[in-house]
Image 1: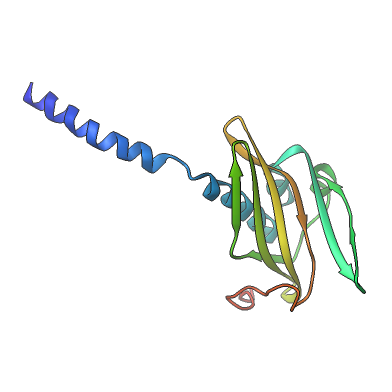
Image 2: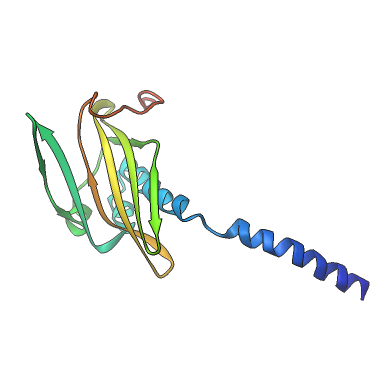
Length: 160
């Protein structure tokens, strides 16, 4: 009986802490999805990248040239059929906002193509939660040059 009492006491003191430790931080969860997206882009894994999205996701790349900003719209399916090679995209200083089943991640980044500097900007991920999982509903990004945006604080990526 004493062993059962000790075991029960141990469970009541350990389980609440374990449950708290396993409770996911929603901000960390959505930043992890954004991190996974950037990692997939860097790997050239277009399938892995688009698998992070809801089927209806739309992407909005923007660029400013000669003071004029333009955007394009690209569906998840169109992105899925667009190869991504030679790209290293690194995010830093992410900020997340979460309310119920919607979230937004603002993620400054810099991008190198084939080992050469290309541009920097901000990725904006809008995420929705369904079936207990966060997925990207839309993504928009700017493509700029310093001083409008920052390069990664760690400096250029290591050459492969």
